[in-house]
Image (tube, rainbow, N blue to C red; front, top):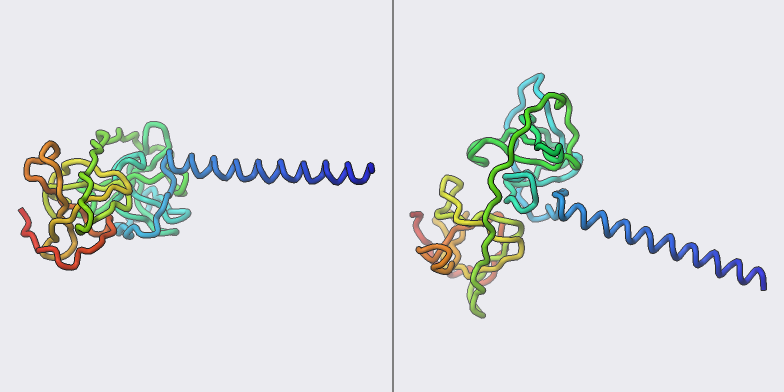
Length: 227
């Protein structure tokens, strides 16, 4: 009888340990999602890094990590830095949670991107200037597409622009998972035109990068010239 009680107690302890391990894993996933971990990088494009000059501070990705337009997952990503990729560090966020790295201006108009400090290793970053974050992007809802229409679904927080290129102004940001009706495609097939409501944009359309959406039934949509 004593042996039976001892076994039951042992299995009870093992059960509590297993439950605690699952709880810790869940908390880690939630924290990463909220505070800017590498996130789901499977379908994201690789962001090209410019050459690094000798002697400058550098950040090296410990795993595939998003390089974003600001210090938070609500800021759209420019792309993913592959594990082992390095970039010049030019600054740090005021809370030390994000490093600012040098990017080509054809990728990031201001020449900088933000990577979570949790997923990069920095060498020579002791005296980096604190760079204030850009304004929080406005996040708007895209009208629900009618059944049977061509659609595009955001793979991450994405910019909805006034034209097919990073040189065009951003109307707003669409949240990850947002789905809109596709009206057409750019001449180079790199941008989709989605339907918007008049209270968002007077032209009732916006442009999203094909690299950041998944699409359905878009084979026959018309080519729409850039504005």
